[in-house]
Image (tube, rainbow, N blue to C red; front, side):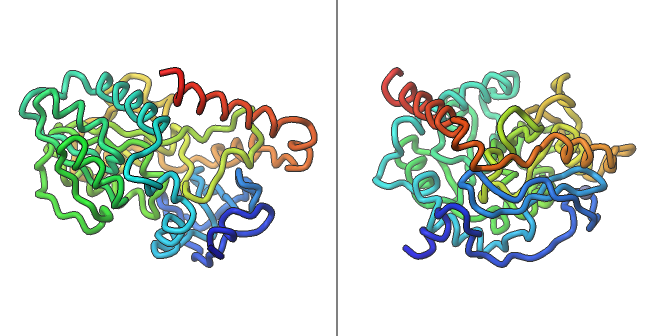
Length: 316
Ligand SMILES: [Zn+2]
């Protein structure tokens, strides 16, 4: 209960120590501060690497601290309150699974070996299974893994990805949707995905696009997302792990389909570019929470969230 409060009370920091780590993408230790508050109005420092522009939480929570956070505070998103996820979750997950299946349509053929890295409640794998694919999921959340197994009869490995041992080159298609930004070492996870894919295998990769938007800066950050990618840093992370984009607009988005073309980094990847950190710093304006609340911004945002929830719960 205490850690639930510590994780949710506004204007306080999170109950974690973490550690200062170098950039996951380029190993630089030089940073600029982007924002020091998150969407729960709690103190949380986000920095950008001054050399490549990859954003991260600083200090970075350790793996046990992240596990503790998920266990105590992310309950409603990551563990199920009852035996079944709420309807809005299933509606969103199914909508998203359809989009992914559409993007991967030429590759989800009968007999294809498909892995979903962070499969959640399993809606994407269910679609792939219905197309005759041979499917496997990795899902660290026990309740989610259980739901996917029992509801759709899926083969789900219920453990953290670091403990998963799959044969090298054994997959034709791997999908990783809105997962990498949660991990302490996303580069190592992408390297594992490369290892598990056969040469020429296909990788659907998606993370939130963290380019500055009209929203106040603090609305964009929260504890569970320990990295923030923009299209340039996401593309560099994939190319450094031997992937090349298939989709033409890969450079403009953080959702794209890639192909494994090498087991090592591709040549000529533009990792460093100090303009990215400057752009992020200039455009993530550190607005005041008080101005946001009294200016009516908070009400508008709450209204937007409520109408989405209402639509996904009652209008489908
Ligand atoms: Zn960097």
